[in-house]
Length: 336
Image (cartoon, rainbow, N blue to C red):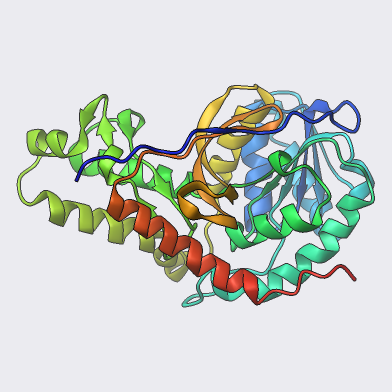
């Protein structure tokens, strides 16, 4: 089916920061599996010289900080410590991983009511401190919680982003690369919409080093391309459930995805990443956060880049948005 013309990219507003940030400082709120793995990955990355860990269980945060800091002798110099919310005001990035864990058989949406209540308390602390950096939401369901943060954090919208489908897209590239025996870094394909069951793969624009994916598939494999697509879709959509079933949690992959997003921000890379962001009429979708490609730099979202989608993909994106909007409509977002 012919491609449709995508909406004009929407620039983010350029608003002044409350005060200068420390570009080499990151704060991580939540020291569970995801938070601690993220701290470890960021320590190894060399992106930051100061990492503050915050958790309701302060002793747990101290233990994680000690454990991670002992690895700095083999990496780059970095001060890693357990702190409080008073330490977040000048952080370049505030990462929220805090929340209830997803249990086997439980969808990300099932987590929503528990985690919205947790986020209300966290956002109250953030609002009271005039934070100057970018707020990066990682806890699930990430799209719903990104919407909650846009509504309740008091921060400009372009400085509130969710990790969205960055990890899903990484999984997609890995699996396609594995199946077609090519470096996944040369696979250019994206997952859009919800980070969850209603996500969609933008097959119509997928390519490998400029070669349409279907043509590349026919060069490297036998069999039905449609069956290949169905198999890949099922594997990617169920990847988290499979990992949770086998080891009860996922954390390494998302830690690497968060590190990638942080790199785009602190290095002002202007990288295009499929992060969770608030829609404003693109494809007829508004008042919901979901993943579409955005240019990410020092100020967070610099430009929203609605992708070119065929009719079927546009319908799937709208269905994904509707699934999220139904959940949002049931939330109590009043500030106590």
